[in-house]
Length: 147
Figure (spheres, rainbow, N blue to C red):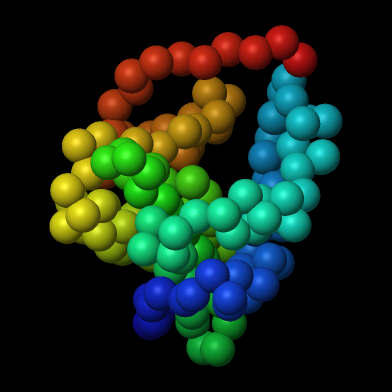
């Protein structure tokens, strides 16, 4: 049984190991952008979030038996809600943890009158695209870049 709860920005270090697992997953599974994922740094991510109004930021964690097994970071900026990062540890996937966390974030965005709710997903990450489709997300645009 997992416990799902919000943490403050000041507690963001709690998710550092999970965030790193997420980065490694993308680096390992990417065909074209391994180097890009290799260079992403947790400290740069949290500095970018630090500039946000705290009411515009939501960080939720999942914990099983005193072990952090998942997290989600979302923002609301100018009426647009966006899931910025989501990760559930591989051995805990398939138990509904990711869905529960994202549902909590979607509810928060709707309660804050977001006109748009979205998520950016790597085109190479088909399992995550399928996950978000099950939650009601649909592709809108395709951003392409050179390696």
